[in-house]
Image (cartoon, rainbow, N blue to C red):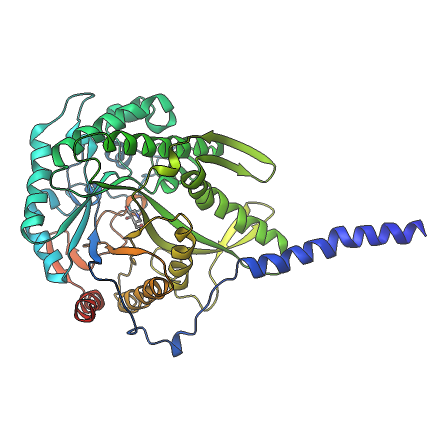
Length: 469
Ligand code: IFM
């Protein structure tokens, strides 16, 4: 008798309860898959006054960013003597956007866009601690004036992955006590530009900065420490709240629209009937995505792994620290539990891969928008794009992703704008120049820009949306 009772207890613990849990997980987190053969991607509708933009960041396009942590990283070698950038390249002159910005604005106009997102290079504005370079500030003022003259709305990012060398040497965002340096820089830039700029992104992709620099070690400072990853993420979020609060108090603060830019990556289990794959997928989703959304919603930050509470934090102002939320959406990973490595990513056999290795999955954009809608904030898609050297997927990418955005809007999600990444090919961080994200191809010998065939989809979509509105 006792044997039977034991047998049933074990059966419940090992089979029935996990089985019921897996059924619940499947219902709660479906992996949306649309039938694209029967989908008319031209059936789209966008609100009036929608921001149609393209995005870049300073280090990736300007050239000569010699005074920041990335420049140092590009010139360093790893412990095996290999270059830090996979291709062995350095950012160097990049797209020479610093001097060629007028021609680049002409490209933005040619696309039919009404907005341009770019970042301010902190190391050029504040090359030494508390020494500000007025000429560099004037450069950005001129860029903004030119944009406005062409009817293009500027959107400024204050932090896009790079730190001045002096800040990096102080420990950058590893240390909470360093946050005030970033707040001071943000205030300085805001005071100079606020009369010409409405849209401000505080920090670009905090989870990517923390994960790539402190967990995977592929971005500077190349560390691999899970607790530190959580600490850096916490400090970046805290820096966002402090910058928001400080800017709101300054002249022009009330009128400005200030938000954090969050990259949302979708994680789904490879085997939807296998609990361990589910645990891996949900854990990654929580650490990479939900931890940030929870903080922005409730002020409570909790960075944890199953059975391991790594970092906790609370800031009561966090829930009121965004006028909009920026969404960068690129990727979808199917994950599988691995005894040796914890988890591995895997593409489905039917997936169309981008050159970055991850799959094209427009349904993921739709899911991301619905998830973000829970924050109750206007959403601006601050980045979305494809690395496609052969230019044989870009057209489809643009059409299907815009369809997904339109479908979410139709269902009530408050999306105010879409910025394609990127205006032109540029320095793709650890991947060097190999990844071609540009609507314009760049010949790095001659600096000539050429509109790619697939990019026509974006021009067409903007034109059609204007006709409909
Ligand atoms: O190039 C990057 C950008 O700097 C941040 N978001 C993702 C892009 C493509 O990987």
